[in-house]
Length: 126
Image (cartoon, rainbow, N blue to C red):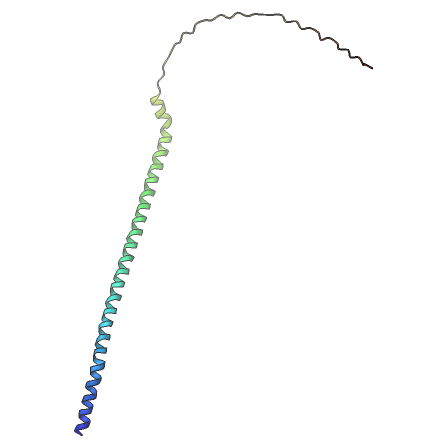
């Protein structure tokens, strides 16, 4: 019976010697894989957060620009309403006298006679 116990312990030892490192390596690889998955998920969540912040900044910028455009439009419309009054305030009237020399022109009348055209006669030459 001692032989069977010894052989059983030897078999268990050999199996443990072969499968023990295999199990340890698999456990180490699984922990590395889990750590890699965790790092990837953290990176993805960081990327998603950065994308969200980027879109928030774009939306804020759009709303600021729309508000600025509306303010500029109201200011423009107000200036258009006040334009005649502002123009009247800036108008100045000046009187300027200019001296133009008097020039005389001589009118020449000439009688033109036209000569009557001569009647042309054509003869047939035979």
